[in-house]
Every structure is written in structure tokens, then in C-alpha cells.
Image 1 (tube, rainbow, N blue to C red):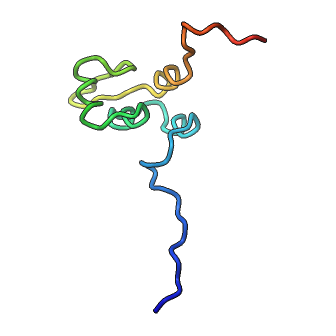
Image 2 (cartoon, rainbow, N blue to C red):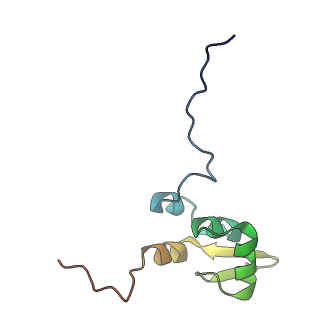
Length: 89
């Protein structure tokens, strides 16, 4: 009988939370599946929204591939709700 206990390991990259730093580290563009993960969408939902033009960011079609600007993703993630008053300074 072994007394070895499993070591605590961080979750795989696809399960760790998307922080702004992690999004920025993607580079200039990413694929639709990754963009979908960032917005909490399944892969199939993200591709369907890309085809329908309803993904919350513009999609660039290059040949048969879709690409999404990381800058656009960051802009959506950091946008403020226009119905909220601006913060007091």
C-alpha cells in the first residue's frame, strides 16, 4: 500500500481562467474556438456565431479559416456598461 498522495497540479491551460494577461499573451490574432472559450462559449457555438456574424467581436475569414483580433477581444472584455454611470474620481 502506497502512502503517496496526489500532488496538486494547476488545471490544464484550457480550464484555467482567462485573465487579461492570458488573453494578451495570445498574440495579435487567435482562432474562433479560443475566442469562444474566452467568452464562455462552446466550440460549436463559437463557430456557429462566427458564421452568423453574431460573435461579440469581428471575425476575419482567411481562406477557410476564421481569425479573431485579440485587441478586439480585449476591447469587449474591458468595455464599460453604457447604462452605468461613470465611476467617480
